[in-house]
Length: 351
Ligand SMILES: [Zn+2]
Image (cartoon, protein in one colour):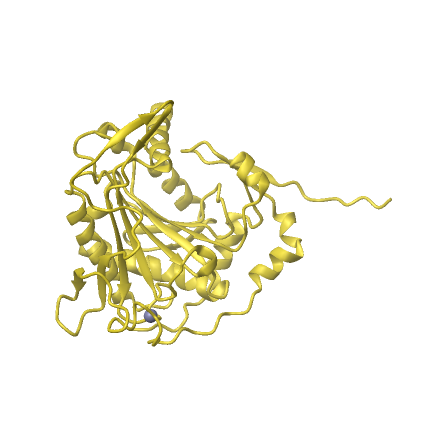
């Protein structure tokens, strides 16, 4: 019987969460995975779509805008409004209770949408000035929401493409403002504290210094940000955009950082667009909780944390092993992913 020899993969551990991933490049030879990364580029989106709820606002009225930028009638480019189908709803009342061994509380909070004016202004192909404007709108809304009662954590996310959970094709973000501390944020906060106790230094400082000296997982850098594929990347082409200044709070970034972040996002998302044929992806901004009362966690935990953006292309699917163990099998090494992305050119941009 013929014996197949495969190169050894690697188990890699995230230094903060201490979770393991399996880098198994031999598995990318599987035909279904190759087909996923070689899928044809989707047809370009139109600038306006008659039957789109965020294009045709006359036919599909949305909740009133809470914020528009630029704040000039007829000339706005991005707007923020409440989701018609919210997961979290503002309420003056806020109940929590126990049911036997279980704890529950009302899903109070806010669930906002931020849409671009035009249908096709996705970050991978959008003008840098528009991305900077989106970031300014997010910062402004973040500051409004963080003072609201029962808002202890704010999560900004973007779903791009059906496979990434986007039910509306029009380019948009979602802002979830919630009363509880998500498990993943708790893990990051406690992980950075544990790391500092063990190593005497902040985790993200050591990681960035190491990545910048190695260079092999770096995708892009400018004066304020470093974009890199993490050593223990959970999915192929996972990329983090990390500020080089240690700061737990996204909402405190100033105009120069916004411009630099817009450039870094355009570079990473543009290269993903070109290299992987406009793949579906999720990205999210992880920032410290905005909990003034200490309801969800001790503020001393924020000191070792640094806000950042994680971008996860959705070109593979979780199966039983991932669900059963929490160990993702990643078929593209972060070193190969970064080298591939560095080579890619940016696509033409829409203003
Ligand atoms: Zn639209």
